[in-house]
Amino acid sequence: MRDLASVKATLKAQRIELPSWAFGNTGTRFKVFGQPGVPRTPLEKIDDAAQVHRFTGVAPSVAVHIPWDKVGDYADLAKHAADAGVRIGTVNANVFQDDDYRLGSVANPDPRVRRKAVAHLMECVDVMDATGSRDLKLWFADGTNYPGQDDIRLRQDRLAEALAEVYTRLGSGQRMLLEYKLFEPSFYTTDVPDWGTSLTHCLATGPHALVVVDTGHHAPGVNIEFIVAVLLRLGRLGGFDFNSRFYADDDLMVGAADPFQLFRILHEVVRAGALVPTAGGTGGPSTRASTPGGDIAFMLDQCHNIEPKIPGQIRSVMNVQEATAKALLVDTDALAAAQQAGDVLGANGALMDAYNTDVRPLLAEVRTELGLDPDPYAAYARSGYQEKIVATRIGGTPASWGS
Ligand code: PSV
Ligand code: MN
Image (cartoon, rainbow, N blue to C red; front, side, top):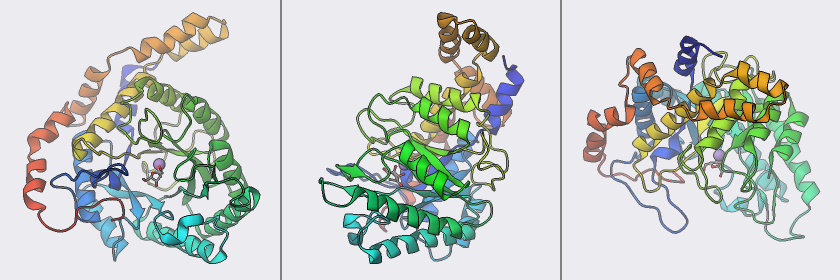
């Protein structure tokens, strides 16, 4: 069993990366509800993310999405982030919002479109160079809607070719994270639909190509912690896109729909010794990308369609912290002994005892020891920041998907 001091030290060292797009207006295909005070620029998104770090102390990096966060000078963006007390994290490529990509991007049958997509991915690595980011995150909306629409196998060949080309462009310490998603926007085939396909491509591409698990990207009922355990064992888990889902890719706040699943996932992460980054935190240079229990990027990938955005991110970070604290409280000796003895109920009980612990007082103590308010959510509400951005962000175009 871990002693309390080491549990607290780990909780203090934990890092969670925020998505810049969580601060802009989002919605469903039916309606985007605008909110007052929403950022108009990538710089303002960073400012809002910095508030989440200010009150939680564990969210010092912001993932960007290109071109949603396109700026003239990315070194300036990095400087703006540093001045705000955070840094630019993962660079997300976007090859899904252009008319040219109707039939896919890197797996498109048209070589011109494939070249255009690869050129964008290369541009994203340029951005990483300028911002000092470690990870390039790739999600491809590629696939088909109808049987016979395209050659399934050829599409895999085109995808493999593009990944290999971009991989050679990565600098030292940079990694490629390949995200999978069961379906949407394609409904018949998706070119990277599952972790097996992602892993297969990563294995063929190179040691710094790693799988990213978005918790909303599976069929209902899939055992995500099993996938996590297997990828960690192979040293091929690059990161998470955390969010919650009730039905499909709902992008709701992590830990809202199924906190028990989040605990089970984090138990596997803790079991692998992969919770705390080895060098520089999430977004820092990696020296152990391909070793079991290597650096994992713990990212949120969420949209706050109806709830306020900064408090929504704060609540999400707190939810991850609570699941993590519970995972750290598992009595690993008792668990191992029960497993070894074939004591089914004892082993399950060891996990459930930890899950059923109220860790909020422990996390309040951790925050106090970090010099933070024990209640980040209430502290943000009292800070006056929300009122300030509502009063001052007048005019301009609120950030949304596509900007
Ligand atoms: C796709 O659904 C996804 O999960 C990918 O990570 C995208 O980059 C992200 O959502 C942004 O909407
Ligand atoms: Mn995602």
